[in-house]
Length: 265
Ligand code: KIV
Ligand code: NA
Image (cartoon, rainbow, N blue to C red; front, side):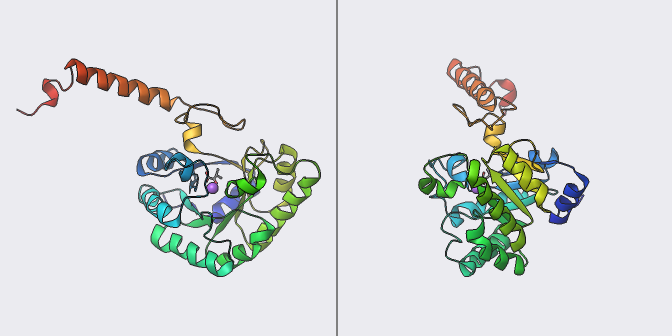
């Protein structure tokens, strides 16, 4: 088997085939998602919340993310790996964006990068694609701007739908190979998906996008507590791991572990 290519994703859209995408930040999950047939893995800046324990994605750095990108690339053989450019690493303009994206490609070894924004980052997307770096765009709710947006809020309701549609066309014209639509009304996502030749990847964008992405700890129920409306939990990993941990701790305290079969003679 060979790696998935961006052109495979375009071909899937022309056939009308939907595809799944997940985040991954480490070798074991990456290997599992790869052999489960998930064609695209994102080393998201959501590592800020889901690995490093920050409240927002704002603090995470390129140097934080690159080792995670390398781990995910090393652990996979089929999935296309997308590295997420963190806040502060591309906003200054095409030159800064190119410098950061080149680090992701060379040092991280990923196959594409992602950045947030529509019309306001079209120049960056054009510079990267011109340099031979595939770009996934990300519009609608963009978590790196949550302080300006005022929290996690659906974007593009009513007349603001036109802004989402304009952003979608701008990133496609700038050369993006796909675009994430986060927390936008289903009707807007459906229209964007119909109008664009490139695949749309929805998260909180309804059922009509070409692909769907979730943060893996949300998908597998490792994150507990209230989840956003768009999350579906396919497992209770937190429960499984807590149960295993309690049994291990109990057996250590009770002197049942290690037993003879775990002991060298
Ligand atoms: O960082 C992330 O997890 C993301 C996806 C949710 C699209 O950007
Ligand atoms: Na992200």
